[in-house]
Length: 244
Image (tube, rainbow, N blue to C red; front, side, top):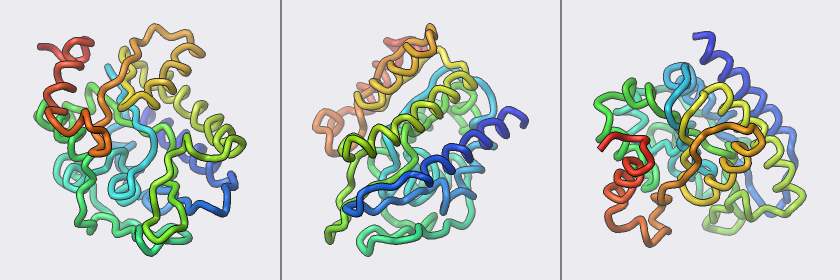
């Protein structure tokens, strides 16, 4: 449990650091590490509690995934059924009318999370077996959206440069510390953005980790909309993360 408490304490520091940042008034920012901390802490204490073979890294929370459940790629059914995480979720300080936080009562499934956790739950018999080998993290814990009527998602790489660099400094430090703690052999970016962040961290640490990526499972990625699971499974076998 001491290991998981170290991860939890480091994540609380991350939360404090990102909360100290100030962003453009053009954006609304949600911090699931704040209002969904109850669920995220459960995720840490149960599943980020020892070294692993591989880290899977996403960019930042999706509006229907971690923004609702506090779990990276936190598709509702995976969180409730596969991980068996339950609890109350609060509200962000300001809620966009088109992006309400409903917590575990959310009815909409996040496609990226459904695909990723579906692949992992098909490969591993239980969540305990899954997290015995892999950890799933996000590079940035914050959700950004514009103030327009739809609350369009804004990815961290689209932030103004000064704000982006301040955020990346904090996120790089956290990711570096988690890589040191989790001692993975493989660093797998879910998409090219995450892969670039992992390459930077691996270089700075001088680690011998193998860095690569899998196709991002977002429906906005045309390559992911046909045979994503099969392509990704084969990629992980080719890399040596999974056995054939």
